[in-house]
Length: 185
Image 1: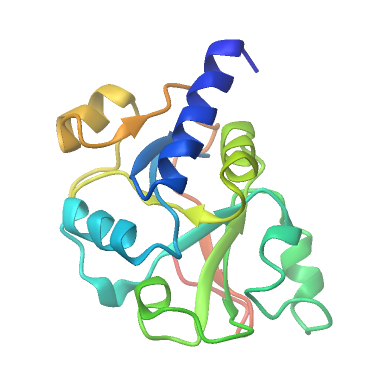
Image 2: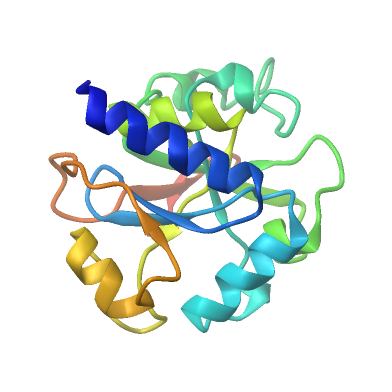
C-alpha cells in the first residue's frame, strides 16, 4: 500500500471514530461507512442517503475475530458454508448473539455482515477498531458511486472519500441467508 493511501486510511479511521461519514472502495462499488454503534453517525448516514432506517445495514470487517461477539457462527450448522467464502465478496445474514441497536438491524434478530478481502477495507476496519457500516455510496434509488468524483456529486464535501481502486466485481457482493442457505440478492 502506498504511503499516501495509508495516510488516507488513517485519516478516514480518525473520522469514523469521531462519528463522521466516509466513503471507501469495496469489491465493486464505493461504500459509505461510519461507526455502526454511534447512533448519531448512523442517523446522519440514513439522512444523507435518504434511506429509511427499517432497512438495516450491512457491516464489514477485516476478520472473523472482529465479528465473533456480534453473530452466531462458531459451532452452527452454517459455519463451514460461511467460512469457505470469507474473507471474500459474500455478505451473510447471520443471527445476532445479543440484542443490537435497531438502527443496525432494522428491528430484526439478524444482521448482514461481510469479512472483506479488499485491502483498503481490511486496513480501514483494522485502523478504526473493528466493524464499520458498508452501504452503497449513493442516494437511495440512484446508481452506487464508483469513484470519488461521483461521491462528491452525490454528497458534495460532506463525506471524506478514500481515493483507491475498486475490487474486480462487476456487481455489489451477493447477500446470502446463512440459516436458510439461499441468496437474497
